[in-house]
Image (cartoon, rainbow, N blue to C red):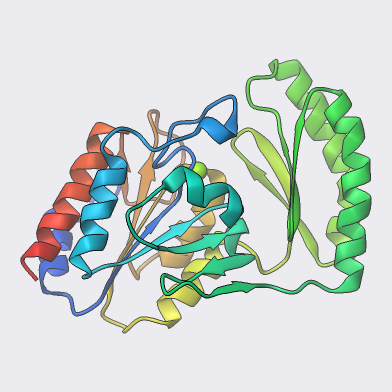
Length: 264
Ligand SMILES: [Mg+2]
């Protein structure tokens, strides 16, 4: 557990967590709770992570939220938790409440048509070796594990093919580790964090854990209002306050969270 900012006091954070009326733990999935896999359907949590989350959920003293780019349908079987959990899928395009109800953002006809055209365009990127992931509110192209030269060609073509939709049709391009996504505007982890914060008391203790560029949006939205934590085997430029190497330091962090809420 390494501090990236001198003003951050981890012991004080967990002390505050012991006494907080409200708290929220926001967790990214791929690369944070689960190691990357060539086959994304095989990305299950690191050993011990599922159990740690189950224990925090069983306490009933934390608003635990999974905030992911994946769809709910994709993620829920991989998580396989003991009880229902709040999940923001597709960067906030869909939301599952722990009580069971679900919400989905509605897109305009213009945006939907643009996404259909972008999906057709993506065939050219797939022919270059990329994997295409179509979601309700966006489309992602993945190039993880392809040669660097190929990934550059795919990214350049993706920008050329999709750039026009990003300017006129309510869509925006987002880079992430291993790909690029064309996504409906207003659907980002920053939007998710802002909404979650608006639903909590001003003095709630909040932490957000993530690994990717998309999590940096969440870290920015949380700045001054909570603890942002980069979970990654190697450090990179980040807005995060703290850096954890998975899985050991991630498990330690979750254990400290559980212990703090035990004392609440
Ligand atoms: Mg991630």
